[in-house]
Image 1 (cartoon, rainbow, N blue to C red):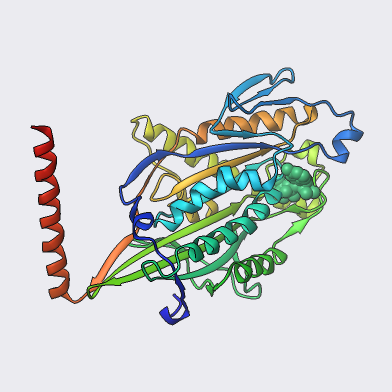
Image 2: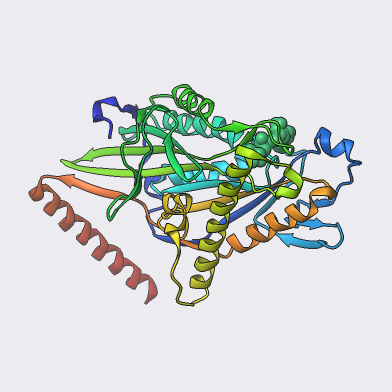
Length: 388
Ligand SMILES: Nc1ncnc2c1ncn2[C@@H]1O[C@H](COP(=O)(O)OP(=O)(O)OP(=O)(O)O)[C@@H](O)[C@H]1O
């Protein structure tokens, strides 16, 4: 944890900051993004097989025998740019993060479908937004925010620190109060959007990338960038502290060996990627069963990915999944598989709460509790008067 004097003074508007104090039990938000056709698809005699109806939020796959329609929270066609994606997807979840909720944005899809493209664009805007937001509220209520970041990849089932690539493989641990964390991970204080983006770029360069038939720069690992936003305010000797974690998860792409022509090291990587994505599918399946009232064991420990994302999947976190797909008929089978995965994920429910605690002199806190009890009693009294 960084020292508190590493913080930057921000601007906390009391109302905006505490507007989301109620626990929320909500479904995972699912967004589908179709990318433009690439050169390889044009060379193969491109035919568009993914029709988007933006108003109805549906995507219709029109390739035999995979033809089907799906409805999601938002469907973006190939002409939708990064700014729009950020406004529709990144901004609401960033707002929640700044209000004290843990949040998670996961990019899922076939290799070459546009996950990294989407996440990198979102990262840039996300950081600008976090810090821009901080500036808007400057001096209103004197919140101090201490953002810091960390970046890991899971490559062949091993967790590596992308900000310290020479370090040994790391272990994932669970803490009853703070949830999942990576032991020994470097955390970097980031006082500005530029600094955060710099940390992200530095880590990205250390990520395992390789050339496959489907993508000349294919990510061969899952990456998890974490931005922790800790905000503090002292009122009457009592410190109110909110800590939220934002996970930006860029998954490695699913691929079918018969199309991706992988051999040697790429084949081993593909086996590991597909195994962990299948573990992710099993966790989601169990969570959906639970949300339908069934009793199920959730196999979080079956992969490093699912264990690390335990809080984000079905836990104390708001979660958005972006499913990236190709528009081409040749990828119909993979697109169908991604859409089915996304449709299942939509049924998952998370229970997110604002992560807030109070620190201070017990006598002052006792007075504060008395004052709040009195306020609640007064409000209840007013509500009863309104009813009679
Ligand atoms: N919406 C888009 N608009 C323009 N180009 C895109 C879009 N989405 C993806 N691309 C381009 O398609 C190529 C593949 O995208 P990207 O590397 O993001 O795929 P990926 O899903 O992360 O693949 P992998 O799983 O193999 O890492 C890149 O050259 C990227 O610039």
